[in-house]
Length: 289
Length: 260
Image 1 (tube, rainbow over the protein chains, first blue to last red):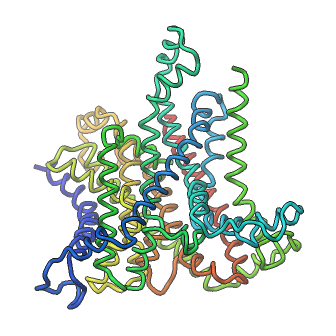
Image 2 (image 1 turned 180 degrees about the vertical axis):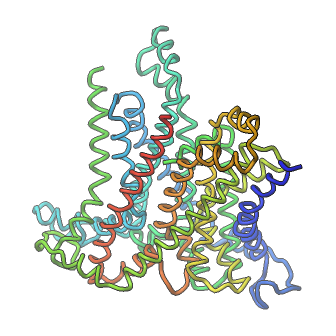
Image 3 (image 1 turned 45 degrees about the horizontal axis):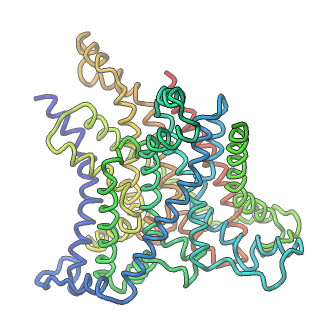
């Protein structure tokens, strides 16, 4: 009886907060997405549920292609960040002796400086009068017709890879550490070359960590709208920018809600598809530092 | 074979240099005597730092972020610890669902959570302010605090609890003298992580902010004004060093208790 009371005392405060500030808002967004408009306020009654916003998004126009672009960029960023970070994680997990924690910390520090600032740093670097071009010009390496690197999708991709790179190294590193070293010895004893051991043992066993890292980059990137504003320009706009505009200026919340929900559904489908390999433990490692 | 040993360290060094270069560029321009963020550098100055200290709006934004961060991390740590204890120590119906709801905020793009909260706050006619920003940050900080404290509790020896009861401890005594001291380092680490999450967060804040900006919101608003921007860069450099200190502290704490 007493233990039962304790249970409720433990569960109720976090449960209520999560319900009120997470479950309810998302449900309200679902409801909003079926409303024709917001006339009569949020609690207005008697409106006819409509699928028009979903039809708007799916049926035509630029919305769906833009969502596909956002997804493609998020996949690209997540994949490249993982691929670039993997050798470093491998190095830290298998090749370094005593100074591992120092080298690991050195790698992660940039991630803990402001996300916004790191993006702005790239705006400064890539700008037409920015650090990179002016530095090259200063050295006499480029002339006035130097390519403007800023304001393109490539700039967005480069910036986002930079932003996430230190972060993905962590779960990959943790995944590599968990690999039983005796398996590698066994494969060496059985005559496998280093490369074969890596391909047949290390790489497959490290995939849970890699996938956790991949997901943790994909999710924020698919909804990204800040980097496109800062370094993407009008040509670099993504799906998230449309949502932000629809809500930011209060133009069309129901349409924005429908767009946001379609994206959310997409994210959850991806997570479910990866659910078998994506364990909560890997996510813990992704966030713990 | 020997080359493998050389390639990996070289790659590591290359990547680290690449990661720090943009930050160094920021730092460099914060001491540059000119508003144009381009080379060649004009000369050394600390004007931007002095201007920063005299810029009331900027300091107010920094203070707002600190206040929100402290409030958010304290609330999120308490709630996360309660949830973690419940999840690790007890069985209850709907446990999986509860865990899912507690962790899912981590799996939802902040943009979506931000607009959902915007809908909620406007429906309830809540004036947007630092409080609403704090509420939004608590939601995304809870998964971190739950997971960090829970991972410490999983290693907790059940015998300690039984021993405490066998020796006549009451539940509250057990809580105060056994459980909390054991998970205190994890709670502190969770607090620090939650603080850095909140302090740096822009997307949720931009949807839930009222008149008073947090630091990231303020910084974002300043990007347009080239002549004031070096001040922002100067402040960013200061914040960078401070948050670095906090992260190193958090890591030291975590390592201290994993070694035990």
